[in-house]
Length: 170
Image 1 (spheres, helix red, strand yellow):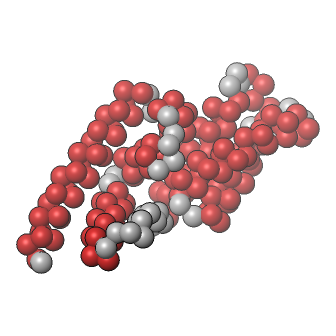
Image 2 (tube, helix red, strand yellow):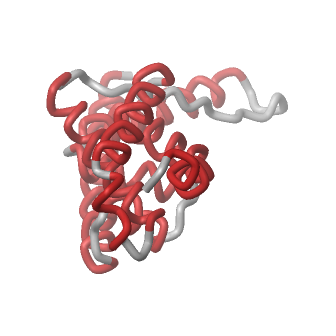
Image 3 (tube, one colour):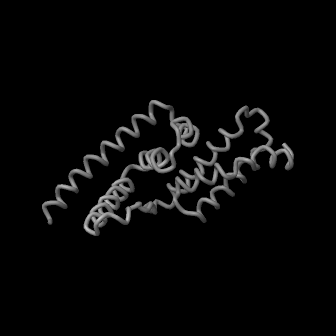
């Protein structure tokens, strides 16, 4: 595969690859670096890519593996930067309670195992369909449902446990 063909085939996936990388590593500069590493890996195996039927899926799988390699190497704690939307008509006390609960849920999500955290964020924050999650993670639909179910159950149980402790502390 020559350079022009490579550009025509793989560069259109850049935005989608970036969104997936950013969602997994939750850092702009690291996501950009991972995209570059992914393109280097794809370029290095360009002669073997002529047999690939679905180049988008192959690029996503390569990106996913590169992201997971990066996370394994860094082992740093991931933080989400999601803001809660609180209407201005709500009382200050209610705003504080909602904010505290949202922060608790964010913390609980960050404490999930890596695979559960990634899948639940792709599903509920990015609005990805199960098929898009399947393409991004390489998991089959049954595994995605099980992972989401376990993640939700863990968050629910921990939220109720922490919520009870919080109410007792008041």
